[in-house]
Length: 183
Image 1 (spheres, helix red, strand yellow):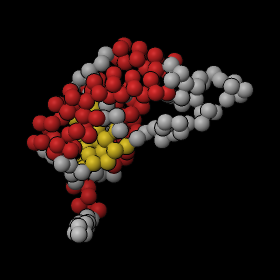
Image 2 (cartoon, one colour; image 1 turned 45 degrees about the vertical axis):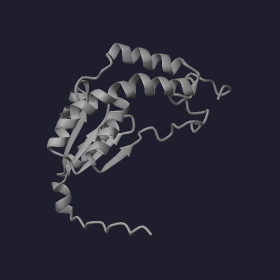
Image 3 (cartoon, helix red, strand yellow; image 1 turned 90 degrees about the vertical axis):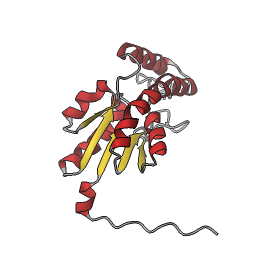
Image 4 (tube, helix red, strand yellow; image 1 turned 180 degrees about the vertical axis):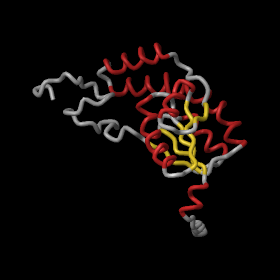
C-alpha cells in the first residue's frame, strides 16, 4: 500500500514573494513572449523572477523589465532559422513540419541550453521553473536538479489534428490566403 501524499506546505503571500521563479524559453518570440508577459506581471507585483533565454532574446527580457539569465548563444543563425520556418510553413504536411521543428530547432537548442544553465541553477536553485514546452534543455535540467516546474504551451489551438480548417494555424498546411470555398 502506498503512503498518502505529503501535505502541502502553507505559504503566505509574503513568503511567496520571497521565492525565486525562473522562466525559461528558447529565443523564438512566439515561445518567449507568453512567458515574458507573465514574468513581467509578477515582477511588477513584487515577485522575484528571472527570465532565461538565449543571448538573442536578451533585449526582450530587458524591454519587459525582467532580470535576464543567459542561456548562451542560440545555436541556429537567424537566417537559418527563418529559412527552416519558411520551409515548414510552405509544407502541407503537418507531421513533417513538426518533425523539422523538433529535430532541427528544439533538439539543436537543448544541449547548449542545458550546459549553460546547469552551473547557474545548480549554484542558486530557483524555487520554481516555468518553461516553454519547446525548451527541452530546461526540461532535462529540472529533472537533473530535481526542481519543481511548470510547462507552458503557448499553442493552445495547435495540436495534431486539433486545428479546424477555417483557422490557418502553423503546421496545418492551410494558407492565410484561403478562400471561404477552400476553408
